[in-house]
Image 1: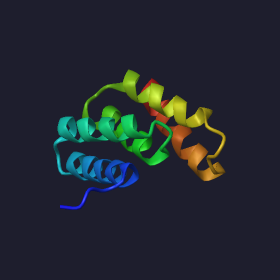
Image 2: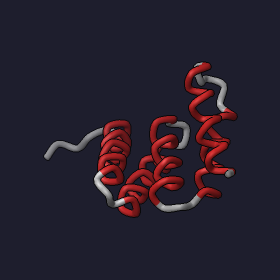
Image 3: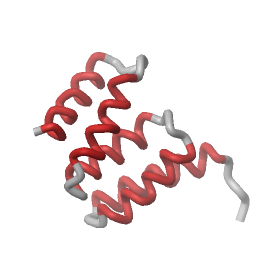
Length: 94
């Protein structure tokens, strides 16, 4: 019954959205992930999850491409993360 913080709400929406998408309801999962991204547009995990759900679950490569590009434009990716995002961006463009 206790209200959470915006950060807690964003993380809950992010994690729930990813789980729901993995369990086969990509549309509902994407909706939850979109809410998470709206609460914190700079949060990389929610953006990564949403991009992957758009690409693999909803067959929306254009939407995924925009989000993968947004991730690549950020300065704080490790080399390993940058490679993973680059690979998924290539898949979205294919």
